[in-house]
Image 1 (cartoon, one colour):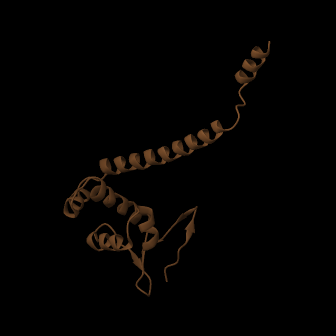
Image 2 (tube, rainbow, N blue to C red):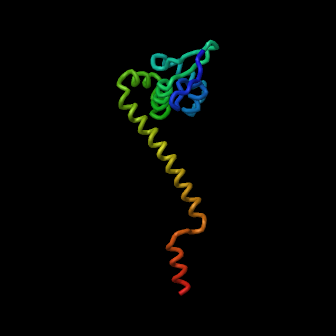
Image 3 (cartoon, helix red, strand yellow):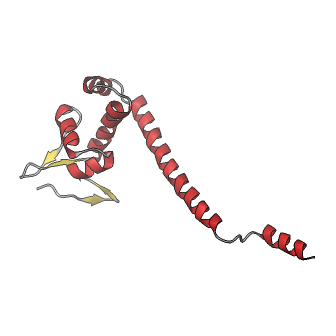
Length: 135
């Protein structure tokens, strides 16, 4: 039986529900893509028939998602692109994911700064202006 095992902080196997959450898509779409791209995605199944996907499978799903949903390719077009050289597309997808992560971090910092600016000012310049006004 396949178990979800943790290795160095990352999972060895992901359920279809976990993959769907990672992609932000429905489980039925993940199942559909799994069936349509058998040469690239090879899920392990337990005795019940549940699919378990490796990290490599998850990366392949991300590639399919990028090609189909973001680049607007057909399934056949995505399949052909994946059969060809993957490396330029892989790098582009990796850069896009890094940029999204950076954007999320910057938005969080911006929100923190906005909440800090709403509080009373703790800057020395404000204290100096107050002193100069009283003189």
